[in-house]
Image 1 (cartoon, one colour):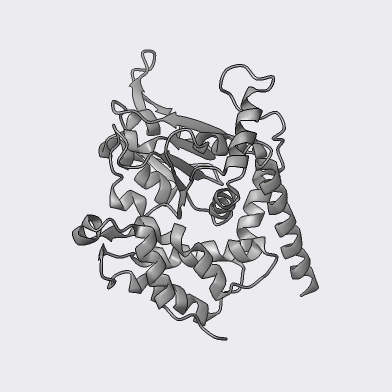
Image 2 (image 1 turned 120 degrees about the horizontal axis):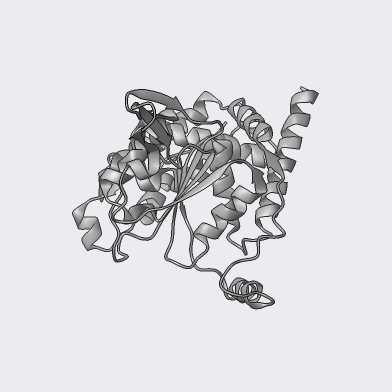
Length: 324
């Protein structure tokens, strides 16, 4: 028991160090940073949404620099093809045989920048990648390196030149992370960091030094997977998920992946708090980012100007948490 407690404590310290390292580049946005860390340790993928200029790409760059993992960036555009992401086959002039050229997806940390600027056909190229951690090219099934994460950024759907993501792809993201405007003090700090002794618009990343490697990330994922979750807590996650399917104003609710995401993410919430067990509060804390992208609003709710955040908050508050 003492050894397990020590392991949990050390893991929580490592995650705190990662949070502090990212903070060397990212001003404020502590909730956003925590949710990204939760996604990584839960071995999931994250969709980061916010208007342009709030640091979505900076966050991912700081994260990739803080971890000694291979990383690649794909800038999604309306003319992009699926093969630009996964790869393609070319005819070798010497052997007269097809040779597979691997795309940027063959990495460990993939930044899919402005993913909703590409049409659905191109977006769907990531479906197999995100679910099965493999790519099928010319009849060959090629495994991706582990650990593997997709961190996708998108502008709000109302922004000009964007396409809505297919529901099947949205469901493959563990969390949808909302990044909002900074406070006045934080915004002053942002401006100072990018203007003092700086040319151009690049954020300084020199202070972000690697603090995690591949082996440590995989070990953290294993520790999180061993976190104790009482059946009553699992039942609580399932009841919240099922309640979204019957709530007025929600056209269709979250599927079983929603409940799974709640439990997986809550395990990491507990780990970051230095505990080896999950509480109902851990489920409640992560419910909004885990479920907001898995529901669709009914037309009447849209006409009334209601949001997924408001409806989900009401759903969560309506479900009684286990007392013991």
